[in-house]
Amino acid sequence: MNYEEALRYIHSPKLNGMRLGLDNIKALMAALDNPQKQLKFVHIAGTNGKGSVASYLAHILTKAGYKTGLFTSPYIEKFNERIKVNHENISDDALGKITGMVKDRVKSFQISLTEFEIMTAIAFLYFYEQECDIVVLEVGLGGRLDSTNVIDNPLLSIITSISYDHQAFLGSTLAEIAGEKAGIIKENSPVLLYSQEKEAEEVIYRAAQEKGAKVYQPEFTAITRIQTDLNGQVFHYKTYRNLRISLLGEHQLKNAALVLEAIQLLNSKGLEVSENALRDGLTETTWPGRFEIIHQHPTVVIDGAHNIDSIKALVDNLTKYFSDKRIIAIVGILKDKDVDQIVGEVSSVVDTFITVTPDSPRAMKAEVLADFLKEKNLHAVSSRTYDEAADLALKQAGENDVICAFGSLYYIGAIRGIFTSEIFAGKFAKD
Image (cartoon, rainbow, N blue to C red; front, side, top):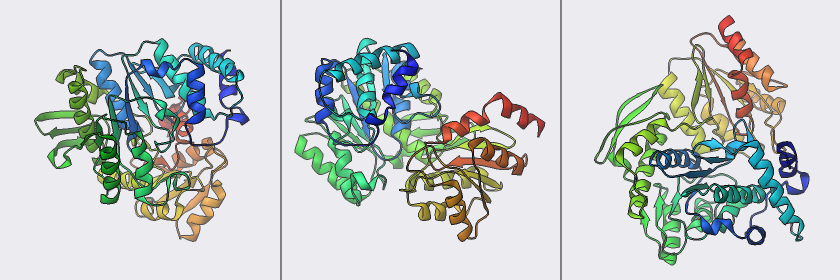
């Protein structure tokens, strides 16, 4: 199977949809001889920050000399981004070959699989073939019934910031959502927990106690920011002095502190990580689409914020770094998000909205979103294509203004690709 055939199979209609449960992934992995049982994992669940924490860890572990697999979702620009070894995307050829292997096994028994289940199986096979020393594994949705939860006891389970998202699948309260995230906790495996609302923490501590798993938490009060600008942040944490990260925002300092604690726990599990590897890994970590500045004059920011907590973090960052700038927003939102609250959060900092339709069947149409914004007495115009949205934003932005694309990970990759293309480089220079 070649790359194009692999993508057609992975995206085929019979694999579309979302279904939580472990029976089918267990059957599939058994048919593939359970390669995941030969691997060591750090398993990461949460609502916000999973990808950043996973990227920090993968960079540090790679710097420490470990062959490190990384499984994340969704991708920003290229499908292969979801599966990496030592920061290198799975190759087109490898994706084609392994997808063909999975498809052949699927034919041998009658079960209905989802795209994410197929991707999980492909990732496990690839990491096994690559003989990874450790895999940083990000949950797709929830935790308890997510297909990544087919693994046995990980070296460490991490639960990042929990907030309201995917309520139709995970529950309508923080306690219910936390219960789903806590499903990744395994017998006697340590748990590292980001500080949560009380009702969420109580659920996770109770779940850990039932599994005989000890819970550890970072001390966010031990973070001291020393310096911050558009190039990154310098901070102290406990006995660590002058650590540097490239990712911006208060929440990224907290994510970094979480990772520092994770490294300490992994050290206790026999993974030797030097302080130099830790420092270099933190500094070199990038995570596309998370308050990512891809151009200056005008400043262009790409951010995948799409739920209330991540939107609040985005607004905080825009206020902190660009309080004196005019902000033109390119925004696309899915219909199942709390559009009214999202708009309420961003309306105080955005001057003009340019709406787009994300590439998802759940997308709110650009013209519908624009009408909604106008009803709120906000300045908005809809665009038919992403290219048109980028053009409109660039025409409206002065050299000292900010263009910020946010609202859904289903479109910001395309917007990012447009703004970083040679064609737009010419337009920036021309303007």
